[in-house]
Image (cartoon, rainbow, N blue to C red; front, side, top):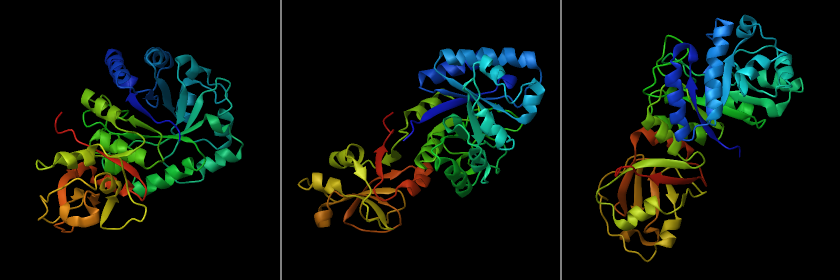
Length: 365
């Protein structure tokens, strides 16, 4: 599996250099290593060079790698040849992202640039674009993929289309990236900014939930915050999530016992391989805690999707088995001990047979 990274976006044509520096220092504090920077609005060559070079090199000194978003029009406007990427290299950038494509042959030639810059391709199309480029014997280690973001509400990618596009890249083992949206950021490349996610369903979710979902598709390696400036709390929350294991943030019931809390938050969980539609079962806790009593409580109500249950003393061999509710039902032999936060219920689709997962509670923070 490719190592997964998190990144920030800044927009030098619409921002203050000092604020950008402060933002990058905050990102460095929380382990961010990528910068996405749009050049699509660039007009004046010398002004662009001065402005972008300063902030890119500042980022380089603080452990960031910068990708510049460009298009055929920008190549022409800046007087840059497709066969000479030294202009972008002199700025300090590590990669250029082609927001618009060429003819396939040109992209393949670009991957052999002597500056050894990474060429990022626009992933948000479900066509033969990538296969066409690869058919020209492109230098594959220098090809990355990165989705678009969508400033206009309602225009982000549908989930199934996003997955189809991403699979086109992942089947070739290409490094991929997509965007999440800050609920605080007001800056983007255009004068419309309803948030900057790749997928429409992510637009108004907490930033860490958006990122969890992208990582758990196993189709995205890097997650980048599309708009700036994210709050420090958002930067922290995104940085703290596990990029490799499915996790659920839960609300604990006041009646949860010490044993149940231990099972929930400390024991290791995986969903049984012989899955069913009613609940996702984590069965090892019943083995590890077979001799520990668990009196009945909170067992009279109808359980709802996302509730966390543990078998009580009346459940025989299934005592202390943990279950995640997938369909509403009632069973007095089970205690409700917690519930997945409503904003994270969409993550249940990643709880597949044999999936390893964990729970986290932030109620005491």
